[in-house]
Amino acid sequence: MPPLPNSIEARDIAFHLHPYTNARRHEEIGPIVMAKGDGVYVEDVDGKRYIEAMAGLWSVAVGFSEKRLVEAASRQMAELPYYHAFTHKTHAPVVDLAEKLIQLAPVPMSKVHFTNSGSEANDLIVKLLRYRANGMGEPHRKKIISRLRGYHGVTLASASLTGLPNNHRSFDLPMEGILHTTCPHHWREAHEGESEEAFATRCADDLEAMIAAEGPETIAAFIAEPLMGAGGVVVPPATYWEKVQAVLRRHDILLVADEVICGFGRTGEMFGSTYYDMKPDIMTVSKALSSSYLPISAVLVNERVYGPIADESAKIGTFGHGFTTSGHPVAAAVALENLKIIEERDLVANARERGVRLQAGLRTLSDHPLVGEVRGVGLIAGVELVTDKKARIAVQPPGALAARAFGLIQERGVISRAIGDTLAFCPPLIIDDSQIDTIVETVRLGLDELA
Ligand code: PLP
Image 1 (spheres, protein in one colour):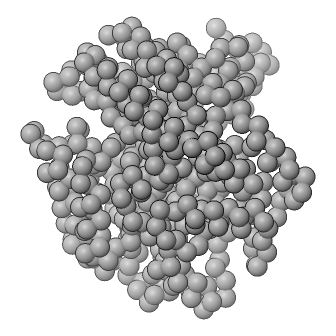
Image 2 (spheres, rainbow, N blue to C red; image 1 turned 90 degrees about the vertical axis):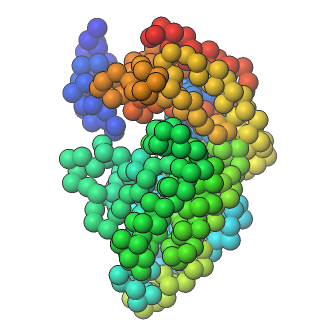
Image 3 (cartoon, rainbow, N blue to C red; image 1 turned 45 degrees about the vertical axis):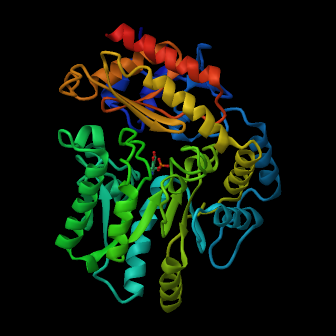
């Protein structure tokens, strides 16, 4: 049914170019208009309730109705609604948050720089690495290695780091100097009979071969999510991180951990780097940092990274980077309160404990005729769908099967995300057992209807 004239739906079609949406298809089907949030639920304007099993976009850790975040924002708005941090200015929320992030970091970090989105944070990594290389008198050391299927954002530089075709196609990306190595997706990429460990060795060997081919002295850093999210929830095989970090150490290449999804409890540890025993030199965080109630992200750097950057800024006279809203006081106050809630309510432990149930529950779907693989850690999971289990392929075009499953599951009141032929789940960290059971049951019913 076409939307009523002048309705939100009609005006959305008329005026709004949506992110990550097929624009022509949107003109035909219009939007679902969300009106309210409540715990792990969201409700649309027609009163239909959904479990938001993706926490929005992998982000709303404390749920959709946390009054303490509203109050923190309101207090800060009344006190100092805006100030910047350019040329030696500061304010309490940004200092408190920087200190808190340094305290929480899984490895010794030296400084925090604030940005507004995960994409901006990763974009800055590319700039920081150039600035540092020039500062160290090593202008040749600027290449960055990322991974196929890795997701790091959508600005020119962060979309270049992203290893997904739809972020490059028709945008004339990736930029020069950014390379993509093997995706550690054992189920999809391993050879017949190749063990997880042998596959991890091959991934590390591929990385080392790329470094050798480019010249180790030209590589600034390797960037990766501890566990891939938007590439389809790809859990690295056992020993992957141990082997990859050994390669990086051998060639003196920095490790950048993109903790934008994993950070603040998602895996059942405070950071994905803790879960996988990674020792990053740089970390990017966002999303669960403020539960996305307000936009904020941050880049943490260790002394090895900070030192040459600080020296270069002294030489030039300034570190010529920063946004009007970098370290926005209201966003920083909300992030601080959000981190306090995560700690006080031990939502990291809740993610670990409820995560066991989510993983076990979804794995009961493994023998479903449409399920190829179920994978995940803590409160992040992927269910990869197939129509031919043996050949591990789904009906064409790619993504069509998961898109249909997604629609059926959403109609039944659970919002997931279709990524290629994988359904992703990443619920708020406050979720309880019965809500997890509802998600699993709803997925099963949706898949049964499709089978
Ligand atoms: N890095 C990772 C790992 C992400 O998952 C995302 C977003 O999903 C980003 C970066 C980009 O963040 P944003 O959408 O805030 O720009």
